[in-house]
Length: 363
Image: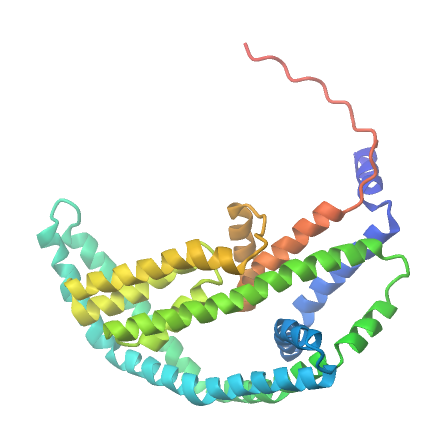
C-alpha cells in the first residue's frame, strides 16, 4: 500500500511547479471558504472588473489612454447601476408585492382549476392525487409566507449590507480597473521565478472564463429583455418579474429552464385559465427557450466548454451548495479549472505499476 502511494506521489508531485500550483489552489479555496463572507464585496468587485476589462482593452486598442478608457467604462457601469436602482428595482419590487398580495386568490383559483382535472381525465388523475397536491402546495405557500415575515423583521441588517455593497463595490471596481497591471505585478512577484505551469493554466483559464462569463452575462440580458417584451406584448401580469427569472435561469444549465417554467405556467394559468391565450404564452416561451439554446448560445460562446453534462450537473450541485448563487454561476468555470489542471498537470511516465493477475474468463 505504501509503495502504491509513493509511486502515485512520485508520478504526479515530483515536479516542483506542480506542488506549488496544488498549494495555490488549496489555499485559494480555503481562503474563499473561510473568509468568503467577509471578502464578498472584494470578490464581487473583482468579478465586475473582470467583466469590464475586455471593454477597457478594446478602447485601449483604439488608441485611447488607459486612464480615459477606465473612466469611460466606469461611467458606463455607474450609469447602468443608477438605472437598475432607480428604474428596474422599483418595478420589480412593485410587481413582487402585488404578487404576494394576490397569492391567496391565486391559490384558490388554481385549486378550482386542478379540481376540474379528475372530471376531464378520470383515467389519468384521481381526486386523492389532486387533494394531496393541493395540500402540498398550501404547505409550501405557508413556508414562503413565514420566510417573507421573518425576512421583513430582519431587513435592517440586509439594508446595511446593501448600502455597504453600493459604496464599496463601485470603489473596488474602479481601482481594479485602474491598477490592474500593478496588482497583477504585485501578486506575481510573490510567485516562484519558474512558473511556466502556473502561467499556462492561468492563461487557459483567463481565456475560457472570460469567454464564459461575458457570454453568460450577455445571454442573461438578451433573454431577460426579449422575454419581457414578449410577455408584455401578450399582456401577462408580472412580466418584468418573470423575465428576470427567465434571464437568471440560463445560469443553471438543463435545470433552470425547467424550474422557471413552473411560475410562468402558473401565472398564465391564473390569469387566463385553460384558454387559447395560455397556449400562446407557452408557445412563445418555448420559442424563446429554443432560440436561446440553438441560436444564441452557439453565437455567444465561440469556444464551447468541453465538459460532459454529468460533470456540469455535479459541478452545479457541489459549488451551488457551497456558495449559493455565485457558486451556481461559477460552477462551469470552476469545473473547467479542474479540467485544465488535470490536462496540464505534469506526470512522470514509466512509473512501475503493481502487477495485477488477469481476470478469469467467464464460463
